[in-house]
Image 1 (spheres, rainbow, N blue to C red):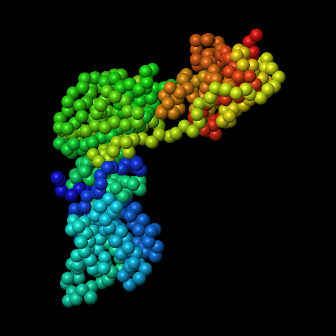
Image 2: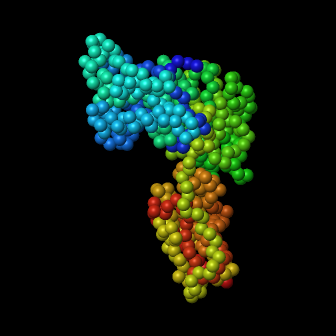
Length: 517
């Protein structure tokens, strides 16, 4: 085991920033370990995220208490976790009965045994390294047993009573966190979705995979090669979790870290020769020109790589042969950039479940229009009628005249509109400057054909009016035609299908129905 870790702020060009760990990044570990003594690291100008979260929580949950400060200038004498942003002075004066009660109430909560029999459960989950209050110190590395505390400056005096109340911690509670606690990597912070930092091995820029429960990196699906914002240590085994969905082209071209959507459903992405890797690394595969996958250190490397995950989440282990940052790439076989799309790679400790790290996808609240099964309102017989379909309307519009069940109609649709600024017409959606047929805007449903036109819940099989073999056209105001058989009698609804919201749509389509005699 290495010596105590050290947090390092690393800002470098062309390196991917770490993303906040997801709120559900929870593990199956029964309890966080007791913190060892971890001395001050490099000075920081701001509190670390765990320190800031705990300070805010204490002041908010114990009214009448306050903050006596977190960060201390590095020019002040001596070592202190205040200087690296891991310590907080909580105002709770022993002369103030209410404040003193609050302080001891918190200590009782922090050091209590929980319902699962975990001793000092809350203090361990918070990553508390030690607490000093009212002439006592409670250290994690001594099982939080109270020990008399005398500041070094107080020892120079003839009596402790002559020492300042602040040095005796009579007017405040001093709380120092471990590096994992300060970085918000312990379970209390993860459960609260606190922004976290990676923890590095002492004196290095290398990720510590034990004290870093999880650190996450979003990888743009641009085809570009990026590097981790930290190093991986030679010979140390890291667990990686890849998750998410990204568009790799128009229509239904969707991929996750290991698989692609095809006519046969989800299938593993093409790849080359598989080889064993050094250490405990998962076997990896070389990249072909047709490979569309999330590459780690230039290769496809996932456990059970011959299977596709329904949660689009995959795990692997990786043991680097040298200490360095590694490359990450969301590779698209067609080499075209897909702005706004990304996959996520987590470096996660073994107790963090992969399912808790799986990307939570945006839901589609609006289901595909259902084929009408009940007759619509009765009216005069439709021989020929044109309706203007406002694409902002979720429910579309209704014909004024009546269709007859099993009667056939010729349908012509013209016009174009926009969805959040993206052009579409009755048959196609503009992607990367080109109108593309059968396009999904929800990566969870690659086979869906969004923004098509439905009459009585039946999607029209439209073809360009000037060429029955063409599915997309801009001729004659984006003119398309189809034949349609009415499923029920009565007036019929005419609508488009936007799976999210019609509120950001603009424009209208003109739909003309003519009965075929």
